[in-house]
Image (cartoon, rainbow, N blue to C red; front, top):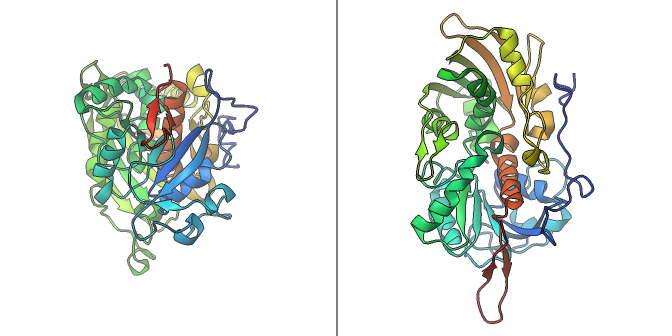
Length: 393
């Protein structure tokens, strides 16, 4: 069975100009910048932005040691295929909020992301962040479009609280949380959730480059990833909770996570047990997962998957080697749905940690922001810094 024929008969909606014209009222592509463009997630963003129907990569920024070099000179490219031609000759800039772009993606290390993202938001840039620093801020949306698109309503409160004009910060969750919550969402909607117990087997690419030393991970499993269990136990509460117009209200789930690093290159595998509020048979659980479908608005987004959860029937699936690229890396793949003797059901899920869990998640978030009119056109005034030009929402 191929990665895209994973039980749902669903493939990623490919981002081409014919299938995905610009949203109504948009006359040209939005210009995107990538902060932290030389890292693994930054590279993945650069690759995903090549030939994107809505966005054009115009700026790359990174640390001072890369500043002034061309992107091809500065980056140690780790992805399959060559550096996109649109990025090769871009000059790497410093993390100064004066980039020639309409909005920025942040793939910065957490050691610098917090302050840099605030600087860009304060200067009027929408910031679409993959970094952890602002995920749990009380006025920052932690977003998975298929799960909690309504949380974007918090942006106006954030701007008011922080004195931002047209800038703001929106984040995507931790790479292991992303796949987990995408699978929990249809169960939460159909049956309600009480408790979730998760054990992760996380790929080495989640540690970045150079990541885990080869002598530590080869033929081994490391049963600790700093801060990972805390993220998995807190982020789903916000994602599955509600924005009441003034604050985020947690979902009130019982959550426990064990996180392990394993010698797999890409793809986080998770074994979860779930307690449901409503009694459901295994057939009903599988149907709820398989029939989970995005709404009409999300279906128009270039990176969207109509059915973002793929359900496999084989006893030994999903597997990272065979299933990690389902939906071009944007699907969560589920298998081994069965009864749990302690809770109600248990299953295995797989998601691509660098696509659905990082760069692809940020790209989908930016597409939703564009479709809803949150991205501004920035124009250059002679002798002045760039000023925001509002776009009607």
